[in-house]
Length: 406
Ligand SMILES: Nc1nc2c(ncn2[C@@H]2O[C@H](COP(=O)(O)OP(=O)(O)OP(=O)(O)O)[C@@H](O)[C@H]2O)c(=O)[nH]1
Ligand SMILES: *[C@@H]1O[C@H](CO)[C@@H](O)[C@H](O)[C@H]1NC(C)=O
Ligand SMILES: [Mg+2]
Image (spheres, rainbow, N blue to C red):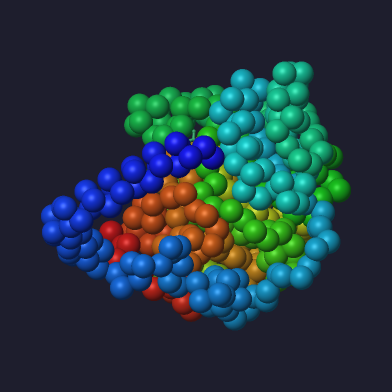
C-alpha cells in the first residue's frame, strides 16, 4: 500500500472515531431504546442464540415414542430395508392426466423417491402415449397401464337397466351427489369388487390407492408398505367420515343378510362397534374415506370378502342405489378383519377435496415437514368418525384433540 493511501485510510478512520465520540451520548441513547424494544417484543429468554431449536423434539422421533400413532400393538419399522410387493394404484381417465400429475409428484417427492415402488394405472379405455410418457417421466418405479375388461365395467345380466335408469333420474331430481351418474356407479362397483383382481396387480400384495387432485401434506420417512406387513395391518386409512344415507338405503339390511348367511366370515375380534352404535341393529354411516387406502390385496382377494362382494353385487345396490366403495370396503374391513389389522395413519397429512388430514401433534408435523394448517384437520370434527375410531379401539388421542372438535 502506498504511503499516501495509507494516510488517507488513517484519516478516514480518525474521522469516524471523532464522529463517534462527538455523538456518543446520542448513539448510546438510541442503543438503549433499541435494546428495550427488542426485550419487549422478544419475550423469549433465548434471544441471544443464533439458531432456533424445536422445543418438543428432545432428540426423539415420534416413531420411537410408542404412543397413539404407534399404539401398543405396533412395533417400530426402523432397521428394515427390504421392499415388499406393493404398488401405487390409480384408477383414472386419460383426460384427467393433468389433475393427476401433481398428486403423483407429491407422492414421489414425499415418499416414493426413497423406495421406488411401482405405479399401476387402470382404466376402462386405453391410455394414450401422452399419458404414459408423462406419468412414466414422473415416477421412480416401474409403470404399468391396465385395461379394465368390459365385463367389469358394465351391467351384470341380473340388473334391470330400466330400473337403474329410473333411479338415476330420481336421484338427479333429489340432487343426490353423483346420483345421476352411470360412470360413477361403474367406478364404485369396480373399486369395490374388481381392481385387486386385475392381472397387472397380480404380483403385488399391498397397494396404495391414489386419486387425481389429492395432496400429501407431510414427508413419509418410512416404508409405509413394510410398516403394514411388519405390523400385520391389512387396511390403512387417513380420513373417516359419515356417508350420505340416501345413497345406501338398503346396504345395511343387505349386510345383515350376509352376516346371517355367513357367520363363519365374521371375525371374532371385529370392529362392529365402529360402524354400529346399537350392536349391529343399524349402521351409523361411519366409513373410511376410500380415495386414500393402503391395504392388503389378499384381504380383498380372500374368500370372506369375495363372498361379501358377490352378495352385495347380486342385490344390485351399486345400480339401484348408489353404493360407494368406501362404505362397502369399510363395512367389510370392520366385520371381516381383526380390529387390530386396521390402522389409522395419523402421521401422513392428506387432502382430498374438501377435507384435510393434518397432524395436530407438533412433533409429527415438524419432523415430517408437514405443509398444512392443523386447524383444518378433519380427524376430530363432528362429521368425521375419528373420535369413534379412537374411542372404540381404546387408542390414545393426541394432546389437544378436544380443541379441534366441532
Ligand atoms: N377410468 C376411469 N376412472 C374414473 C372414472 N370415474 C372416476 N374415476 C376414478 O375413480 C376415482 C374416484 O372418482 P372421483 O371422480 O374422484 O370421485 P370422488 O372422489 O367421489 O369425487 P371427487 O374427487 O370429489 O370428484 C378417481 O381415481 C377417478 O380418477 C371413469 O369413468 N373412468
Ligand atoms: C330392513 O329390514 C327390516 C326387516 O326386514 C325392514 O323392516 C326395514 O324396512 C328394512 N329397511 C330398509 C331401509 O329397507
Ligand atoms: Mg376423488
